[in-house]
Amino acid sequence: MITKLNHIGIAVENLKNHLPFYRDVLNLEFKGTDIVPEQKVKVAMFRVGEVQIELLEPTSPESPIAKFIGKKGEGIHHIAYQSDNIEADIKEIIAKNIRMIDEKPREGAHGTKIAFLHPKSSGKVLTELCQVGEE
Image 1 (cartoon, one colour):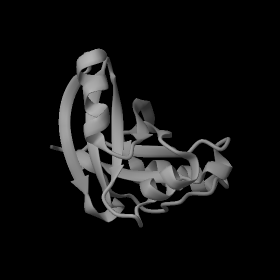
Image 2 (cartoon, one colour):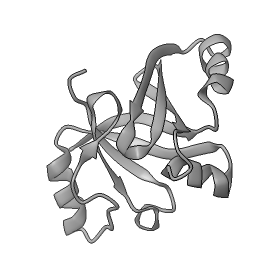
Image 3 (cartoon, one colour):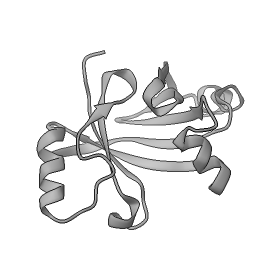
Image 4 (cartoon, one colour):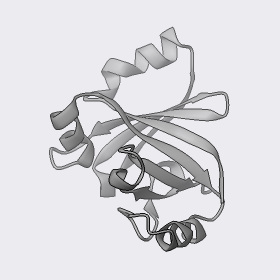
């Protein structure tokens, strides 16, 4: 079941250009970086209250984030909702005739399992389910 908003993903061309704003201007708690080879992305996480801000830098021109930036520029990429059982939530969503990009969870940053709903099924908002793993 969906339990809360987990994070907001923001596509950026270069993490180094944006880290100072979130860390030094907004004074958000910096949680560290991670590389997700499958997604061809480097991630920086910040915590603000119960929600995280996830900055996403492409590590390859073939990265979905690189393609997003090429089409739309830097900015909000997705909203992620935390699930306590991602497999069950995916099955329930599919049963409701909602189109998924991922019909099975895959590995995300910081030990999470993730799955994306197709934006055509969620009001043109790329929506992610994530189940927090053990770091």
